[in-house]
Image (cartoon, rainbow, N blue to C red; front, side):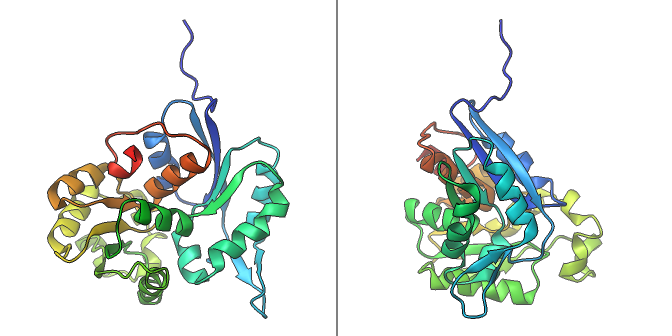
Length: 262
């Protein structure tokens, strides 16, 4: 009898993730169906991970991104995602497409390339969501929060409302930029997040989008959809779903929101 070894016989997906985060891999491995494997390249650059040229004619990938692309090129991957909500948000209009174009010659023919921004947009459209309640991580400062609202509005997904998660008394006195350095990323609790989203989601929202690939949340997606009676999409869930679809994989996944059954 052969034991399961997580070999990606259906698809192998490469994901660029923040160098000091554990959430993306944990959530992807929880959701990925049998035969789909996940392979990470870590990026330590600040957002966005590809910088606009002065004339805005395109972007130049940061060294970490370029190095990971060269490594991914040899791995016979089905799809590759720049799994960083902040890069898409701060890169702004056109950044996602420009980054895909910049990475393509580094990776070569074969794998489809996407970004978390493109994944979330595809997930919202497929779920019929046009006015999401946008939920942002506590480590997003005011500038990134405002950029996030503007980013989705520019994509035609006008948020009905938005909120930045309150991580609780232990963290409340720290500025957003100090939360991760002080360990909050590894002490995230999903029960308070569930309660805050359920209480704050406005009636006019036709869905929920939880942005941030380092934001632990997939364990509450099903419960929120049941309670709110509308689609609930998260950054990692959207990227896995989109990468599977562009790889030709239609295996339904249950327990992590309706998106993964579409």
